[in-house]
Image (cartoon, rainbow, N blue to C red):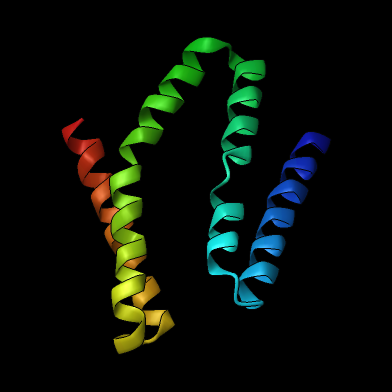
Length: 108
């Protein structure tokens, strides 16, 4: 259980740092911090420790499928935020992400 508290702290630290840097007007640096592969490296290592290489490979392959939906999500926010506001652009973006992931999972 204590290890999950550590995971939560690491994730919260990254979100806090990203928010701080982004709020200061450094969008590229904030994007770099949030997308830096530290979380996936940590996730790969922890999955490997808990289940070995087969679950890591399965996770990595599945992770690749979520990249196109993630790009749709980000593009929705980029193009819709000015017109619809942050909440609607996020809702539509997340809907696109979830819907596209479900569709890809279905055809996979």
